[in-house]
Length: 114
Length: 112
Image (cartoon, rainbow over all chains, first blue to last red; front, side, top):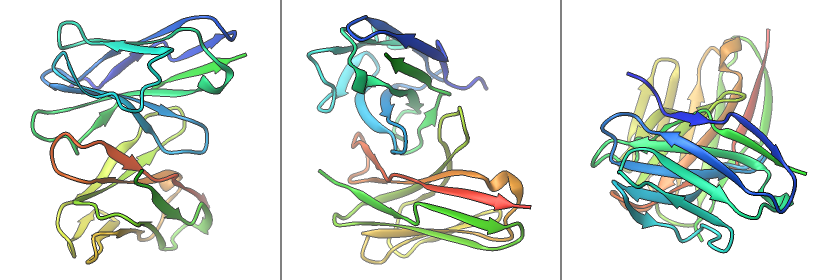
């Protein structure tokens, strides 16, 4: 079974630029999550989708971050404009229906904002 | 918001030694999870605990869900070099679509 795919793996941008990350969850997983992991910290949930609907986006900085999951499969997370403090690893995870504690993580995208 | 305090922050052990790390919270959690993260990878689920007092093993790993539902520990027996990594605890307040809250991790180094 293929795991959660993310791209790109690394991205370096300057502050005020825009960036987008892509995630393809495990086939059949209805729930998809985007996490931000700052160096030395555990992952922090940014947004959770159930199919193509948003379940929780309470910790998403909506003035600059946006995410979509249009067809209930792939998802993109965008930052516009980026700030220095957005430097982090952005992890995508997915879980099977009814098992939201069993989350499978992708390898992440490491973002550096200069 | 809910926070998990994980300790120790880091530890250096000799190969073959046993390891213990724990996680505490001021809030009650209904599910406790332990993940391992290798460099450049996402966290991988090791053990999930669903009931207060539950003791669960996965190979050389054993984890327990505290009776008060505010703590959990993870033990690794007879450590080997591939145990190196960062171990995270995570809690879920309610089953279902409740976000996981992660601790800050315990960085384990194993000296051969």
